[in-house]
Length: 359
Image (cartoon, rainbow, N blue to C red; front, side):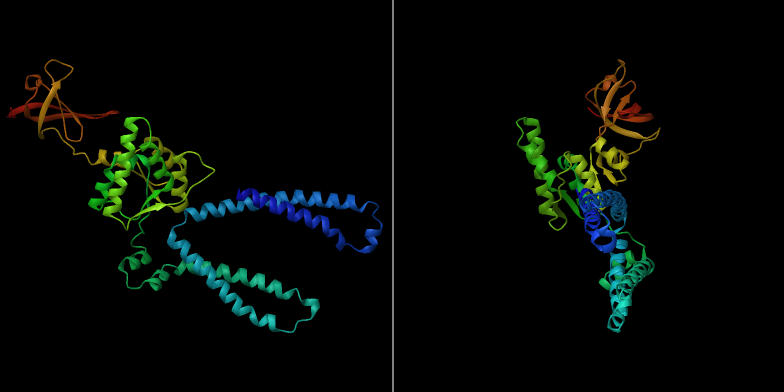
């Protein structure tokens, strides 16, 4: 929408300049024109074409600027904004005497030219100095904060906001991550995610309704335990229809981190250079690693593909195939790991029995 406004503004501005600019021509030239209205139409049309071209260039420059601002860290963005404001302030103070000088009207153009050139020069100087010494500005804001000092020195990076999607809220393990302290920073729940949870909770399907109500219960639990950390973010995007696309857009806008269990959303967000924390991947990485020779106490619950095999499961769901374990079904057995296999469905451990622990 904004891109269209930029282009249309340039078109109307240049068309108006072409239409009314004819009046600036000398009278002698205007008297030689037979069809003044036709000339106005030609100049207005030419101005509109030129305005469309300049508007497209301005739109492209604005998109590049917007993309750069989105990817820019907050501390650098803040320091550059302060440097720009200080540069403009110094420019006004330095150029004020020029406007008080008695300049002949033939050279009156010097005042606006000096104002534009001076403001541009001091603005660039302010932004350049902010890039060099901008970190020290954080000390001026809160000099007593150790965290602020570390961020100012570049030793520590500020924690990004964590954005919860629908799957991670329904999953519920995000609560344990908050309780253990491994999840830092502000926790954001977009308004459109909350609305999706409400739609799921009101669904006619019993299974969906249970999942939706569980998600709402998880949010209430987080709000009761960490009222200062969870925030309902009001952002919404009318031009985007899917919740996943809105989540990616929000993460790009605020430079946040997306928390999800959705495999496809993880891939799409990563492709668009959005930082993603996948709880399923975290659980997979944190599974205990067993090497050949390690002992495990496991209950054999069923028979394997071979009659002599027994199958058990670890607490994290890892399948353990026990050779010669078919006779221990229903018993807890101490087994020794002989090997492991990583498949697309998960990890599989092979073992053989050592001694019966309980019957």
